[in-house]
Image (tube, rainbow, N blue to C red; front, top):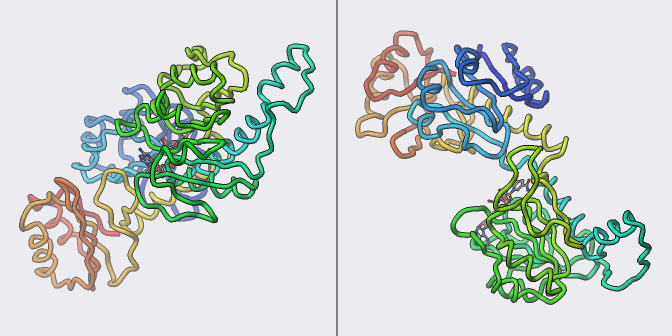
Length: 399
Ligand code: NAI
């Protein structure tokens, strides 16, 4: 039975999933460990669960031949040497969707608050002023929300916004199925020209760097509101600052920044600090109790599915084979170097031991091939050792 080692206070929902699936050998650590302690703590583990602060470099992966699978109980996977994990036959899973709803709710709340100028009014009352006026305050109902990047989060924001009576437009570089009554625009500028609130849900990286800049802000409606809970690099902060100062934009909410403080003790360095009708939050769009619980469950379920069926769909580094119903009496998971003859080597080793392959699912990714074979008959230790010692084999398990 696989030994599971979890770090960094992973939500108890993960343990519940493992236990329900029959895995009881679970060791938990509340914190991320130093490299030395980590080396000791993961020895003999088949399953590792980490969050963003545990670094799994290629030496740690290479030194742990028992390791079968890694779960990142978070969104990012930069903390793992993914290439090294791939070449050692170790799939890595994460939780890209668990906090979708949390981000979407925050964005809708910010749209409503900013249209009413609540951040500014709240601040004024705290300072001892009583500016009772309807000027510049609008209902959300009937306003147009423009969503840039209509993926998991963007489309969820659209669904919630329609419930609040908003008209929803979206722009995406890929064709997307509209949810509800949302309508796509052909260009970004068309979306910007029609939207009372623009919200960004694109990935980071070169393709979206300063997507919102002086020129695209000028294309926004006067008095519009900008919300960014995607990546800090998507917005040119100086251009946004100028547009808020001139009054071209009526408000903004930012959860992400080009440079973010590295610890709780550091302050955000931004010209937007102290501006009226601007909401600044410390990258907490996805941070709720519910999302932590969802992450625990989502990743643990992927790990259990891999351990029990070999399914790798959704892995961030591995050839992806979707869950398949069992066809034979035993299932062999074979990870091999992606070279000519690898499949032949597997087939002949199995055939020589009198096993008949009744179903097979192969995928490759770069230097690695991964095949799930369902066979009729028991896979003996002799077959397993022939398969494991073959020069093309990286890893071989029977599940
Ligand atoms: P996703 O991958 O499901 O959706 C992104 C969409 O953007 C895709 O449909 C893609 O085709 C589209 N896209 C890419 N380049 C584009 C461009 N130049 N113009 C228009 N559309 C473009 O991603 P998901 O899960 O919806 O996440 C969106 C963003 O939210 C990511 O940047 C992610 O890092 C961020 N995020 C922020 C959180 C927070 O705490 N603030 C929490 C979770 C995610």
